[in-house]
Length: 168
Image 1 (tube, one colour):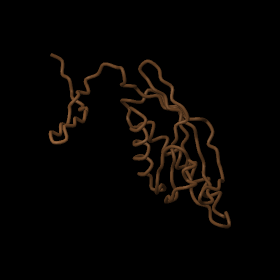
Image 2: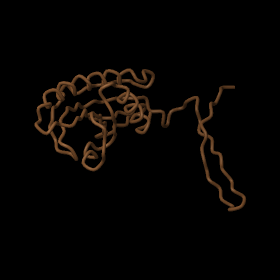
Image 3: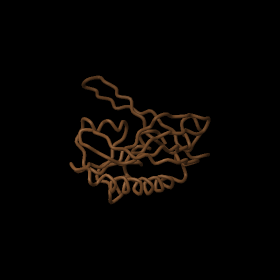
């Protein structure tokens, strides 16, 4: 599973949660410049470790909600953030059991209050997820080169198609 597929899985799982209206990936500071529907989750990869047949993503996962002007809802946001993060992380551990080799949750859920484009509060947790890495492994799939040929412009656009290779 590559990073794009991992992020897609995270977004699919997060947005199914009833207390999450939006989900983003990458840098949490995107909240400074983009408009979002709160509450939301954010997943960003801090680093990636590659072993022979595995790849480990060290990620942070945020739950972020907008504070009321009086900040009266900060404790409620923190409480909901921890519970929601626990539920999402639990779901992530089983999202693709064939690919996951190891899933380690950082023992600390950290609370925060932060001014992004909006005054927000929430929590974040660090996770390590180790997955099977198909790159460089022999598998039942091979990417076969194909081409799109446009005779009028005399151009060739190389493309690749995933095909199942069956043993003889």
